Length: 264
Image (tube, rainbow, N blue to C red; front, side, top):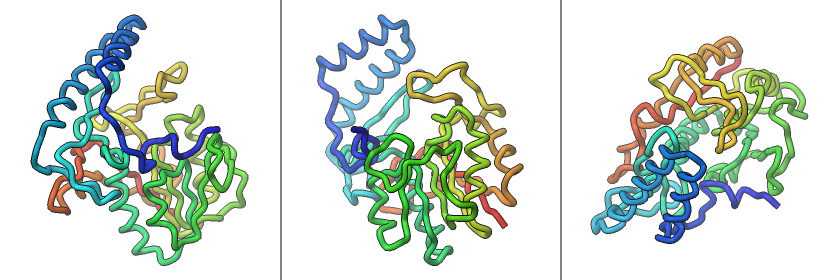
C-alpha cells in the first residue's frame, strides 16, 4: 500500500546515510554507469557529514518550527542541491517556500474549495479549516483517486488547485493542464510547481521516464504553455521568502519557481 507517509514532507525524521549504505549505493550507481550521479551523491554525503558537526543554528523550518544547524544536501545526475531536506520533518526547499505562498493566496481567497494533487502531510494543518480535498492516482490515503490527465470531476469545481511536482510524472502534461483549467472555477487559482532549469529556454523531453519517474525537465517555455490556457500567469521565485525568519529556510535563488495561474 502506497501512502503519503512514503513521500517527502511527511513529518518523518531523516537519518544520516550510514557508511555501509553510502558505499553500496555509490558502487551500485557506478556499476550502472551512472558515474556523475555517483559523484554528486558521494559529494553531497561528505558535505552532510561535516554539516552535522555544526554547533550553532543556521536554519529554520517553518513547517515543523524547528531550528537546526544544518539541512541535508541532496543530489541527482544534474546537480547537488544544498540545504534541501529538513532532518526533522523531511520537507524540501519547495515545501518551505510554498508554505508561505499558500498562506498569502489563502488570505486573498476567503474560504475556497481546494483540490490538492499528491498532497504533502506537512501542509494538512494549514488547510484543516477549509473545504480541502486530496487526490492522487496511486496513493491510498487520499480522498479521491484521480487521473490528472482525465479528471473525474465536474467543470468549475474548485477555487484553488495545488499541483506540486506532479506534471513531470505525467506522460501528457498538456492534457493534464487542460483538465486542471476545466475544473478550476472562474476567479480561481491553480498553483503549479515543476522541476526545471530556469536558465534554459526549452523543455527537455525524455523518450521514457527517467530514474525519478520524470518524463521531462522543464524550461522557461513552460510559461508560454500556461499563458495559452490561463488569463494570467504569475511567476513567483520562492526564494523571496528565504529571509523572513531569524534564520534562513534554505531556499535557493531561481531554483523553485511557483506558477500562479488565474482564470477569469
